[in-house]
Image (cartoon, rainbow, N blue to C red; front, side):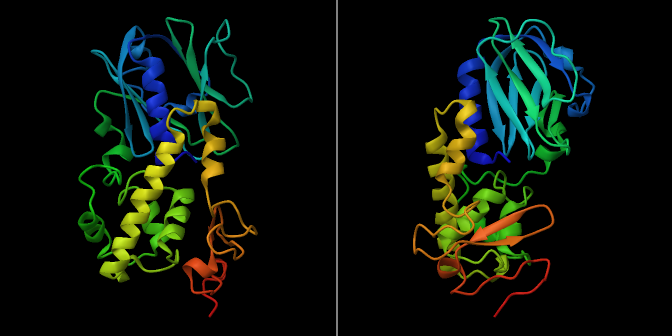
Amino acid sequence: MPELPEVEALKGFLAEQLVGHEIVRVLPVAISVLKTYDPPLSSIEGREVVAVHRHGKFLDLETGGGPRFITHLARAGWLHWRDRLPDGPPRPGKGPLALRVALETGEGFDLTEAGTQKRLAVYVVHDPQEVPGIARLGPDPLADDFDEGRLAALLKDERRQLKGALRDQSLIAGVGNAYSDEILHAAKMSPFKLAASLTPEETTRLYSALRETLTEAVERSRGVAAGRLKAEKKSGLRVHGRTGQPCPVCGDTIREVSFSDSSLQYCPTCQTGGKLLADRRMSRLLR
C-alpha cells in the first residue's frame, strides 16, 4: 500500500505534470472506483489543474473554479503516468485499469488496481472534508506543528499496542504497515508495547524515529518517477518485508508475525530484548 512518503512523492510528480494543464476527459472503466456522484465526474472536464495536495494517503487535484478530484490508492492501487495515452476509449474488462485521466496535451494517467479486493477510491467533491476518510484524519506527522508534545498527548491514553496506534489514520495520518515497522525498528521498540506506557525518554525516541524515518523516505522518493516509486520504497526498507534476512543494524535474523490479512517484521535483538513475538493467531508473547 502506498504510504505517506510515496503519496508525497506522487504529489510532487503530479504537480509538475498537471498544474497549468486542462483535464479534457475522465474515463471510468470500473464503476466501483467512484464513491461520489454529485458533482459528476464529468464536472472536472474542461478544468485546469491549479494545485495538487496530499491529505494523509489521499491525493487531491484542485481545479480552477471547479470541484476537486481526490483518490485513495488503497492496498493494491497505483497511478501510472502516460506520456502518450492510447487512442480511443479504454474497454471495460478483467484487467487492472480502473480510470483514465486525459490532458489537452495527449498526456495523462491511469489508475489501476490489482487483485479482487476493489478498494481503490475516487471522489469528486467541492471540499476535501466531504470525503469521510479525510474528515477523520489525525495530524500529519511531518507538519511543522507536529512536535514531541503533540505525539505524547496523542499516545498518553492509548491502551493499544504501538503498531496499531501508529497505523490508525484517525490518530496519525499517513503511516501504514511498512513504515510503522520501520519506525519501531528505528526507535528500538516492540510493536506490541502499549502506547500509553511510554516513558518521556521513549516518547522522545519514538518521535525522532517517526520524523526521521518518514523524512528520509520522502527525500529518497523525491523526484522519482511514478513508475519507480514502488521499487524505491522496497529498496529503502530495513525490516519490513525482509523476514529471514539479517538485521542491518545488529545482524540478528528479522522475524515475522502473521495476521489474517497482513504481517509485521521486527528484529528481536534491536526491539524485544531477544524475545520472539508469538504469532498473533496464538494471542500470546513467548517469554
